[in-house]
Amino acid sequence: GAVVSQHPSWVICKSGTSVKIECRSLDFQATTMFWYRQFPKQSLMLMATSNEGSKATYEQGVEKDKFLINHASLTLSTLTVTSAHPEDSSFYICSASPPLAGSVTQYFGPGTRLLVL
Amino acid sequence: GDSVTQMEGPVTLSEEACLTINCTYTATGYPSLFWYVQYPGEGLQLLLKATKADDKGSNKGFEATYRKETTSFHLEKGSVQVSDSAVYFCALTSYNQGGKLIFGQGTELSVKP
Image 1 (cartoon, each protein chain N blue to C red):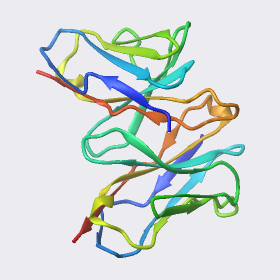
Image 2 (tube, rainbow over the protein chains, first blue to last red; image 1 turned 120 degrees about the vertical axis):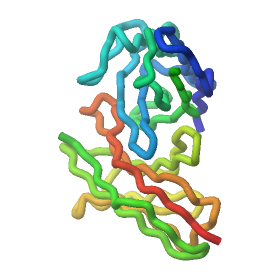
Image 3 (cartoon, chains in turn purple, green; image 1 turned 45 degrees about the horizontal axis):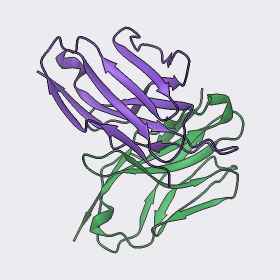
């Protein structure tokens, strides 16, 4: 199946700093990637849809200036958590779909665990 | 709007027991249905999928059948192993969702030796 990677897998940072998380599709090109957030023992919450070459589409309630998304190429999307605070600590997961005709299957990265002190 | 409802967990079974995790959905149009599995500390892995009514998805001994008449996609396995312990998510997507996945709340499965 299609492979999606994330980097870093773990990050610990001080309150007020910015953190960048990378999501890469390793063996396919993805015009669209998705960013999710997951709290312990809960389901995934879609944060935004990342579109290559255009602005991301954010879900209701997600702060655009707080969570900056850049989809610079067909294999890379980045999520930057700006001025991180302890409440931003969470598990962030990205996904992407191979550009097959009619494909709606998303493949997920391994996730990035963020801890803000 | 579209939604997915799963049975609540945690579900605790002994090894070699039968597993059923119920999943029902509401959706406009004709969604595709998925089961994803999440092992502790990891991302989600696609377990199986079905894209149209009466399709059966299967993988690693797990099965689920797309039942349009009952709007269900229950996950089943005849004999679970300790290594199946994980959280299972039912999800749907449709073209009018722009490819977005809508997840159920997840069901934690714990299999004891």
